[in-house]
Image (cartoon, rainbow, N blue to C red; front, side, top):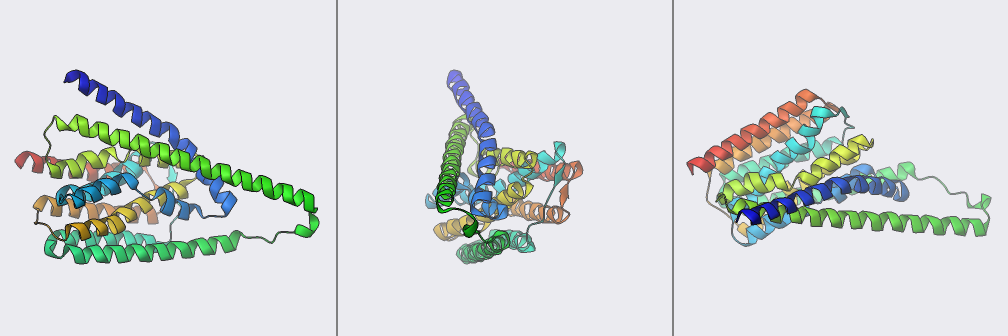
Length: 329
């Protein structure tokens, strides 16, 4: 059994290293994509990197299987841990100047958090809060597409075809199309590789945790949420290092919105209702507090070491409460 554990540990480390190496490639590909297709970096972050496949699969499968505490606990825990890992840890060793996102997204974060929190109290009406969350995601999409239209209008410039001979113009157009195709293919392959590496990370973590006998609630709130945030950490670090802070920050905000609106809503529809658990309510309170702190921090346009320490303190409180709940339970 010890040998098997060592093998799974090596697999886990291999997945981690792969994600670290792929982060550079993804940021470069998205930067090229933004320039080639006149797509706002904020929109790319929100709607491309912000699509959180791994956590979505974990929570949705758990909801379909009738495991509410794993399903919803993973979403809540993932958000708290994502904020600490993606925003807190980089702030400890990087000076981050944050370009403000439109204030709509800050309000959306807080509203989504409140919806989740209230649903943990009124558990019999979970489906109602799920529908509210899905409606909020629809509004989110509409506003994001509006931002993209404004961005494209701002960067679009008239093409002066009359100054370019036909043959040369056709050659330039063909080269540009081939370049765009390469960017898209490279991005898709990199995202696929990150997804596979993330799945390897999750599966190996599950195997390593089985021997500990952790509860469903603790496993969802802490272990799975921590493991599935590795790629987010390296993506935001690489984005800051490459001067693409808006892309990195919007990706993390998009991920939180994705999980707390669309995925929370779908899971709620599958679960319909569940039995009240104090640990879920306590975790949700910390979850909303972390969202409020994040919003306040982002409106200040910068993250300092003190900010990073604050995020990590919230995470430690979250872990301590859930660990205590696990030991008592």
